[in-house]
Length: 103
Image 1 (cartoon, one colour):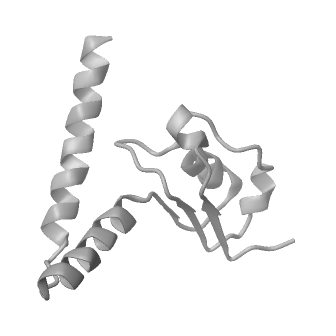
Image 2: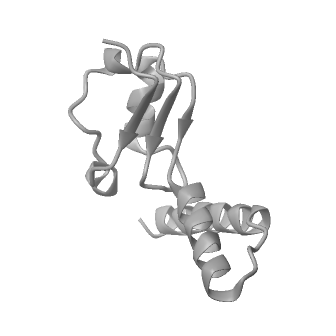
């Protein structure tokens, strides 16, 4: 069976685990999307990449864009999200490296 889009909406990535999906499921998948986000690719993203997904994305962009849409509803102005995305991605990487240094 072929899938164009596979979305991970489970909590497995939050527990540093991948869902029980055969990697071949991702073969020729156009997009594998994990609603979770982290500094490094999540286990779901790693599984999707290994299985052959053409594009793999985490949920940070969705978080930011949902916040921007909410801001638009509340304030009537939609903020530019590109700088926010870069800043949050950098903060995730910094947090991850600091956490690794403590171990």
